Image (cartoon, rainbow, N blue to C red; front, side, top):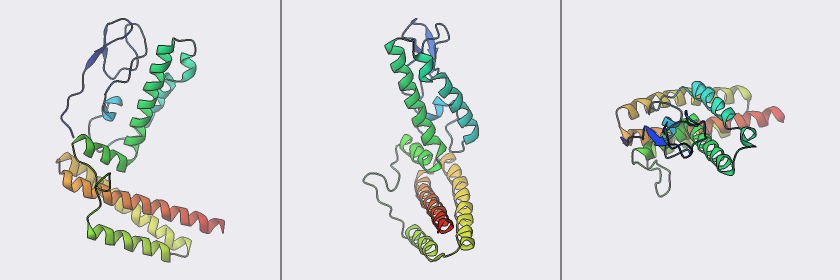
Length: 206
């Protein structure tokens, strides 16, 4: 991860007092604050690690969402309404990024100055992975019954969990080249799981 330090405090626009950089509201005057340039992990009070407790993060997200509900700001000033909308947008972006392991890995790579494979101007150049992906797709194309598709889903989910564990270790050791390849493989595995579930649903509806 990037070693860029996040600011600990900022100045409240309303009372001019100090307020924690990650705070939604000023502790002194209770005014809504601007979201600022916080990274997604800091926004949720998390360590900058690939290993995220998604359930705990979601609980925090829902609590903060309630505090930012538009109804709470209906009688507030235009500035406060605008700031609450900005906070909500930043919160949603952070949550959507961190809850998805592929998006989380890509975010962490970019924070560390590395563009993920398959991103803008970066093609996937891993013949072994491309061959594996082609074989998985052929197996799914050939699957004609629920039992076979369930086996594919079980296998891809198992491989995805192992891949996530390897990604955590790669980020912990700052092995970013390895993290790039693992993130790409995880993306293929998750996509294959989604496609297998979709095919299973189509068979059930037929």
